[in-house]
Length: 86
Image 1 (tube, rainbow, N blue to C red):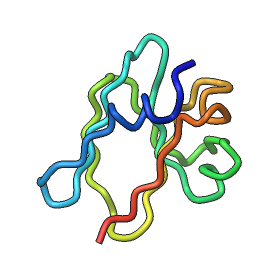
Image 2 (spheres, rainbow, N blue to C red; image 1 turned 60 degrees about the vertical axis):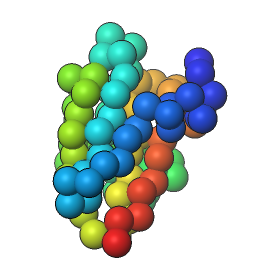
Image 3 (tube, rainbow, N blue to C red; image 1 turned 90 degrees about the vertical axis):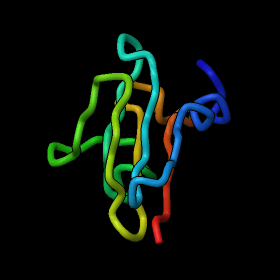
């Protein structure tokens, strides 16, 4: 498993009015939008948004946005990020 800084290098925030792009290898990772509880507990609940393309473009909500890798064990090893959009 790559360390957290490896994961963060593949998250790009660019000017599309609060967007983030998540680039990853879709056969071994995914991206899940979660609430704060899901982020801190590394649990993706039923209402969470799951993405599998390997190049997911997400429009951020103003305030806190939480993302985890939903593959079992990956989030607990640090594959998660919180982004505060203002």
